[in-house]
Image (tube, rainbow, N blue to C red; front, side):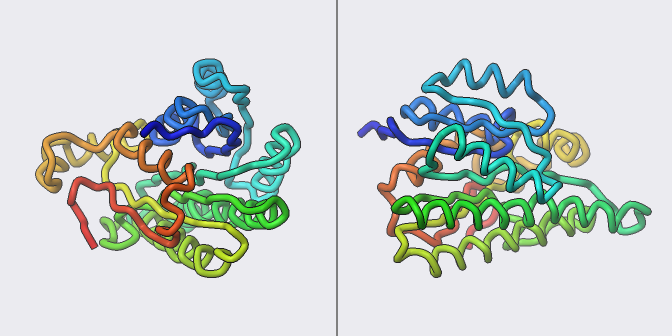
Length: 250
């Protein structure tokens, strides 16, 4: 059965590359109109909008600024009239050793993008969905939320754990409003954002820690997001889905 998302408007944050791009492509291939959020890569975002079609448009916002989070959501609703789903994918992965002089700043920036922005956008989505008959929220977390991470990524792991708790709370609190919320917890995903870490640790080292023979790619995550956005799995609301090639199963 092919999933049909025609007449669905979906916001995907961090969609100009990596996991977000893969998700936006898959949703677009199922017929959805995509609000493609980007921070700095306008060229990639615009090309993606042309590739997807369906009336998809691009929206710029630096999500480290809380005001920009609200502005982004309001601009999307203004131009799309209504949203049916939001995919909170945008994030940052800052390598910050304990001895770094920038440790506190790195912590604050990580929390601002990975958790605060997600919280703000979820709040605005909930209010919008309550006024429009419901909707779906899909948040991208990480296996690090459950298994922790290495010392230089303390903030990253903590921020993603916050996303998981936030998502469960939304699912429990707003289901009667026809609002569902899901979390995906990938492990290593081969993207530009993880390139520095993959180089540091080595691809063979990472492969030794997973059960499959290749690293996870955006194309492995996108189909599950498409399913969740369709409404076919609404009774899995509150669920966290592990997509980490059995490197951490809980």
